Image: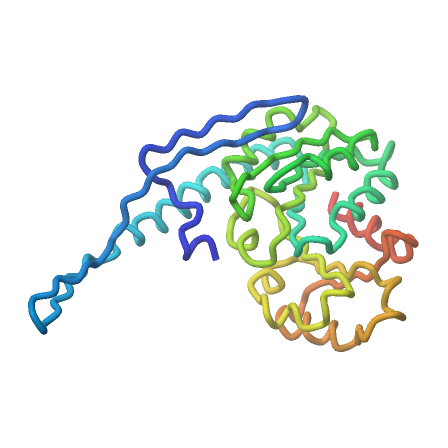
Amino acid sequence: MCKNCGCDAPKTPHHAHSHEHGGHYHVHEHQHEHAGHEHPHVHGDHQHEHQHPESVHVEMEVNILSENDRIAAANRAMLKSRGIVTINLISSPGSGKTALLEKTLDMLKGDVPCAVIVGDQRSDEDAKRLRGRGAPVTQIETDDSCHLNAGQIALALEITLQPETKLLFIENVGNLVCPAAFDLGEDFKVALLSSPEGEDKPLKYPSLFNTARAVVITKTDLCPYLDWDIEKCRQYIRGVNPGVLVLELSSRTEKGMDSWISYLKTLL
């Protein structure tokens, strides 16, 4: 995870700035790092190895999580004060997050005021698909980072939320690992798992499925054409998270979408 590998570690000097272009944030970070290292000295037939402890790495990890959690708590408090329910959608790339949001916004339009923040490493293709569906949409480009963090969300909230917003969707970067480790200030996480991915993903990536409030199995219209055992998938999900709600749907055919929409409305 990023909290262990340090790919999101604060480094010195660290300059971050964002440019807003009609709901589109480009976040650029310029970073330099000096970490612990080891170097051998060879004298004749004897090699002496001097090691420098990785104390910098430990300090970075603590700083990453504590600072992110501090900002996430502020995000959560602000959203709660405005009566906004926030859902962090997490899945692998291509599982159907954007397709699900397209249908969701269409079905909630005029009924529940929504807003969307989308995270991708590059481009605003997903944001383009979601705009014009009755909700403000902000795209965040994370550059080389494999997940959104609370600071990026804090910046995006300023231009995304409207006075009437009641339901905020955060479409995280496509990744089953790192996004699960970073609190953004959401009320809860929803994990998506598409039928082409196989039934065993909850066993391979338990952190996400263990912390998700609900799991949405997507692309169920493809089940007849795949070697896919949906009952086994349900068992794997509940083996990791016994009490989790499991919803099954197809954004293309809209089968199961009514249950998803009803679930969202109960949250409000």
